[in-house]
Length: 161
Ligand SMILES: Nc1ccn([C@@H]2O[C@H](COP(=O)(O)O)[C@@H](O)[C@H]2O)c(=O)n1
Ligand SMILES: C[C@@]1(CO)OP(=O)(O)OP(=O)(O)OC[C@H]1O
Image (tube, rainbow, N blue to C red; front, side):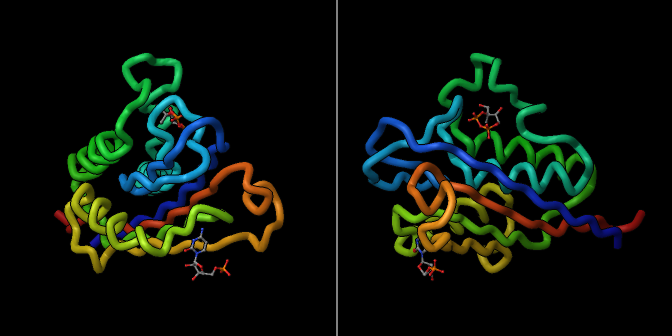
């Protein structure tokens, strides 16, 4: 077996809107997230971790925010394309561990649905997908409610030829 690890980090600022989309789950909120796509900071961090594990660059490279075809893009579709690229190279996801950093909204009620979506898009069992949340104790840009950050770590494996 060959193993590769990857990590990803993404940040989006709050802006006008009444919901945020995180892990493919639409969560009512006092603000939206400013982005070219649907602003799913969690799936962007995870996609970057998957690409990073195989040194394939990042989602900004694969899906440029200057390209109008990605305006309002569904980040689950972008994640599925990244997973297809990983599979094409003979790798599969062993597990992913993700953390959302946000003062608000409350993530806990939505974590299960996020895990379900991510597991489906990565074609793994839900037990292979961890999503956690933390505030930053009112410190920094997340603590001031200016935006949301997400981190992701992944392990990939490939059966030896
Ligand atoms: N946006 C958030 C942030 C945190 N949680 C959950 O609350 C618990 C306490 O968070 P701390 O910042 O004190 O670590 C923790 O268990 C988080 O899961 C949340 O649901 N939404
Ligand atoms: C997803 C893409 C593409 O629509 O745009 P954004 O939604 O702005 O997200 P970001 O995490 O800044 O980078 C990747 C992008 O190119």
